[in-house]
Structure formats: structure tokens, C-alpha cells
Length: 344
Image (cartoon, rainbow, N blue to C red; front, side, top):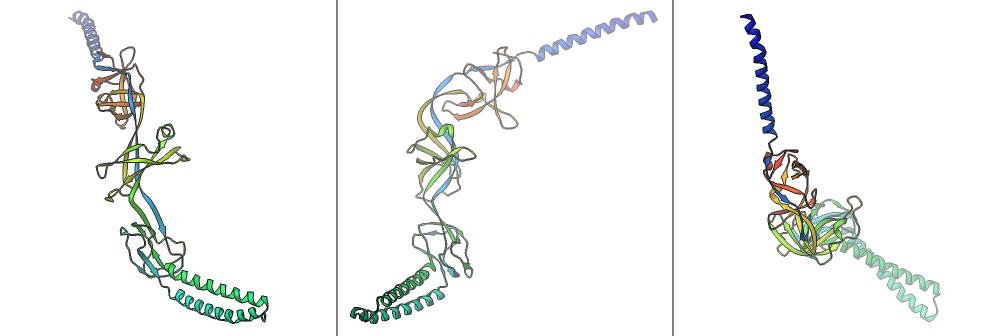
């Protein structure tokens, strides 16, 4: 009985080993079975050049204004967000001191002019030295200047809007002190605005003044058409990009400074572009775009790509990552990983 058991045991071990090898081969065969996919042969297509940029709305003009003289503010007539017209009174300073100075200057001018009249008669008769005559003329001129300065200070105690627009900043309150050169209000002009965006050096040469731009404003879900009006010839020292502005009419005052924009410019130039079906482009966990291409041994290779615009035929332009002649997988990607064998 003992001999029989010893004989059977090696046979059983061999049988189990063969069975295990068979299962491993089956599993290996299943794992290496090519994945059925559909491929698309990449070629270059002729496309009308479209340039897209993100930017913001900027006002047509901005004025930061303040009093030219110092004093205590006794009246503020406007609030932030209020629309004002050119020449509208915004705020005033207590001008008592300047009014008194004007009265003193007027009295001094009257005295100087009266003295001039009397001395001028003597000078005409030859009874007054030229030196004294010149001295009195100088005093009259000084008195007149003092009067004009005092009158100017009174006028400067009243602050008017230099243009029509919207008050965006009010930095003064009644009872506070005003000082020359300190900004009291900021006014923006928005009957026309700019869509401003930055253009890289490689593309700025394709944009010309007068080109039409379509500006989409996501906040308003609206598109406004305008013309390229300003191309700054000086590149930003850090980003090496050029500032470009499209002037937009804003009759309804709905376009507000700071709104985000998406601008599209058609350059009327044709370019050769790599175009693939949009369904070929996938995104990974980091929201980076990639595609699978088939290499020479029919294995899927994962490639990062930089995408451009969608075309009307549900295709996407690939800016970087692919070249003409490659085969990109457009169906069956869900079963793939980098290096998977494929068939088609």
C-alpha cells in the first residue's frame, strides 16, 4: 500500500504542473490577444488660419481726477457706479479762504492801478524818473497776477467731470481734507470699449490693423464684431507677447470692463494643419489631451497632443504631438493601454 502511494504522488505532481502551465498559456494568450480598433491615417489639410485668444474688456478711456488745491471738502455730489456727463459738478471744497484772498488781491490791484494813473501823468510830463515808472508798472502786473491766482483757486475748489462716463472709484467724503494731486474720483468712458488680448511673437505678424475680430463674451452669451485698432509694437518684457486691442461699439453699455472674452480672428491666410476626428482625442486624469497611435509593430502608443480649433466636420486641429502619415486610433480606445497589441 505504501509503494502505491509513492508511485501515484509524482504522477499527480506532474499532472498538476502540466495543468498549471496550460492555464498560464491560456491566460497569456488572452492577455496578448490584439484589441480590435479602428484607425485613421493622418494627412495634412488646408485650413483657413483662425487665431483664438482669451482676453478682457477694457474701457475706452480712464480719467483719475482730483482737486488742484487743498482744503476741506464740503460737498460730494456723486456716488460710485453713477453715470456722469462731461462738465457735471462732482464735489466742492470750502473756498472761504480763497474768496478772502481774492478780495485782498482785488483791493491791492485797485490801489496799484490808481497809483499808476497818477504817476503815469507825471512820467508823461517828464517829472517822474523812469526807474519809478517801471517800478509802479511792475506792482500793477503783480497785483493783477495775484488776483488771477486767487480767482483760479476759487475755480479749482469745484471739481467737474472732464468726460462722460461712470464713476468707478470715489476716494473722498464730506469733511475730509483734499490735497493737490490726490485722486478723488476715477471715471471710465464705456460708450466704446476694447477687447484686449496678448498675442505670441509667432502669430503677431499675421494680425493687421483693420482685421475683423469676433469677440465672444461668456457672461452675456453674446458675440460682438469689431476691428483690430491697436497693435502694441513693444513686447512684454516677461511673457514676450504683444498687446492687441479690438475696438467695440457699446451703445447699450452692457460691455463692462473686466469681462472675459474669447476673440477669434480670421487672417484670410491658408495653412497646412494636422486634422483628426475629435473622437480620437482623449483626456487623462490631469485633463491633458492624448491620442493612441499605431506603431510599426501594431502596438498602441500613447501620445500627448496640443489641440487647436474644432472644425465644422467634427474634427480637431492638432497643433503639436502628431505628424502626417501616422495612424491614430479613433475607436476601441477604452480597451487600450500604452503598448497594447491592436488589430484592424
